[in-house]
Structure formats: structure tokens, C-alpha cells
Image (cartoon, rainbow, N blue to C red; front, side, top):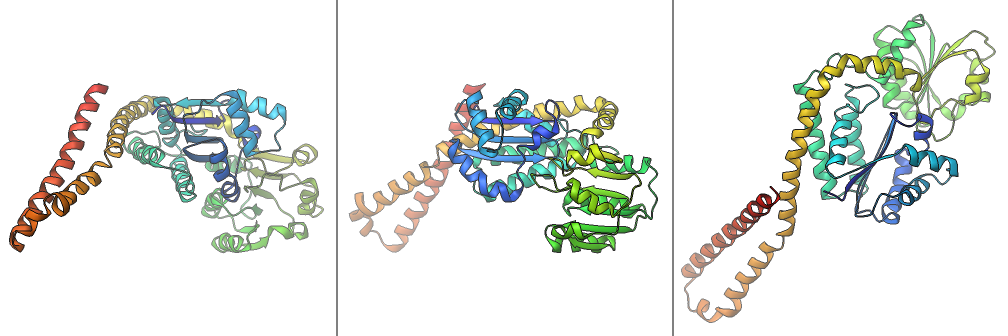
Length: 409
């Protein structure tokens, strides 16, 4: 387990703008992560990026030193400055062995989330694993860890009230929007048609908002969300041609650069001067700082939702200890499962060797004797040997597990 490690950068220590410098969307993950695994000499790699964290789950014998982190971060984003690297390293926490597993379980059970009790994280962890596995980056250790992680999160959500009356970043943003008294006929523009904006759209549709325009880089995705909302779909590349004005702008894309620049914002305004609402749930932010500083807007972003998230945490503190008890038990359970799996892998060659010995005995060592047997005798002997082969393999692994696991105790 000592080679199982997690490199973690989260909202607890780092500003979200800094975390955003290490964000990779799926296209960039596909381009970079394979080379990153080789370059950093990692046996396995899983990359998790959400609106408030970036985590590298790795299997490696290498020491996670300052030099290692510097190489890792620069490999992810070659545009980082020396100051960026220094801040990233200062704000990073690394976990190894049991501590890494505990951290992963707490993340998936939302105990480490900005909004404690939100269930989206378990889906994000599973999708991150499936994608990295599809890229051939993960192996047996991370596979077993993620399997136990999902089981742990499900038990936490089932056996405790940590997710009772669930909230999320999206629901917090929606509550703040409602508090501004936005009328149901407000003109709402979405930039991005991914999961976050789709979830926000569900809230708005449920509460009778009906005037929507959806921009996205892939027009088909714009059309899909717009159809759900009975709105209009637009290609993001034509956003500067939009001249209908807006009341609320909701943006969440995977872009590494600002999507809403001052020029684009002025175009979206279409000459209007009244105060606007912008909800920016992207990491890194989609809205350029100049837009926020130079215009009269209500700006809602992940950073501004932190206080509401802290209030949510206070309401759920009584459940956290119950969650941690489950997590401790699941960590201990995993340690035994992991040891058993190591033994199974170590003894993986035994069945092949036993089979080889049996075939050598039948076809070479005792070939003359075998030829003297009639067909029925050969069949009986083969059944006896196959039975003994199967039972011996099972007994060898069972005995090894018992001996090694008792020694660990």
C-alpha cells in the first residue's frame, strides 16, 4: 500500500483560480496523461478534476518530493510561472498508503467537498476512473481502490444522514439567484451545455423560467439542452453576433482561457445598461476579470458560495463522525482485501506450473504406462489428476493467505 499515493490540491488550502491552472478537460487528458504517466515513471495514474479540486491518484515507488511536484505540475501546464509553481507546491497535500485511501474515501463520501453531503462527487470519481481506465492508465491497485471507494460512499449515503436534504454548488448558486428577485420572464443565456449547466437548467425550468438561449462549441449539444428548455441553440463561435440582450448569464465550460472577454460581454449587452447577473461555475473561471471590474453586475462564482457552503457544513457536523467510523472500517477491510489480492497475483503462476507438471508426467515421464491403459482407464486417471490439480491450487492459495495475513496481524 505504500506505493498508493494521492497528490491533492483543493479549495481548503488553495484559491480556486490557482487550482484551475491544473485543470484538464477530457480532450487534454487524452493528449497529456499517457505521456505524463511515462515521463513521471508512474505504474498507474488516475486524474480527478472538479470545480474545487485537482487530484492525482498514483501508484509509484517514487518519493513525492518538491522536485517531483514541480515536474508534475509543469508537465500538466507548461505555461506556469515560477510563482505559480511555488504556490501550487505550498498548497498541495500528499497522502500515502492508508492515509491516501482514507482521503479518497472521504472525497467520494463528500466529507472533503466544498458542499458536504453533495452526491455529485461520487459520480465524478467514478467517471474519472472509467476515463483513465479507458486510456490504459490504471491497473489492479487503483481498480481495487476505486471499487472499495464507490462501495464506501454508497454505505455512507445509505447509513448516515450526511446527504439528507442534499445541496450542491448548483443549488447554492440557484438559491442566490432567486434571492436577487429575478423574474420568470428574465432572458437567460447559457454558455456551455455540460452537466453543471444542465443541472442549473433543471432548477430554472422547474421554477417556470422560460426564456433561454444556449451557446456551446458543439452545436448538437446546444440543441439538446435548448430542446429540453424549449429555447434557442447557438454556436459559441457566433456569440459576438448575438444582439438580443440578456438578464442572466450562466457559464460553465472546460476552457483554459476566459470565454467571456470584455469585448464579448459588451456584444452580449447589445447596448443595454441595467445591472446584469452572471453565474460563473467554471474552473478556471470563464469570465475575464476585466468584465467583473468594469461593469455593473451581480457576480456569483464558486468562491462567493463558500460561506453558504460553510453554513451547510455546520448543519451536518453531527453526521461526520458516523461517516468517519464507516470509512475507518472500510479502510481496514480494504487492507485485507489488498493483501489477499497480492497473494493471488503472487501465486498466479502456480496453476500453470501444476498443469505443466501434470502434462509432462502423462505425456513424457509415464508415457509408456499411459499407453498400456485402455481408454476408460485413461479417462479415470485424467479425472483424478484434474481433481487433485484443482484442489491443490485452491489449497495453496488458501494456506498462503492464512499464513501471510496472520503474520501481518
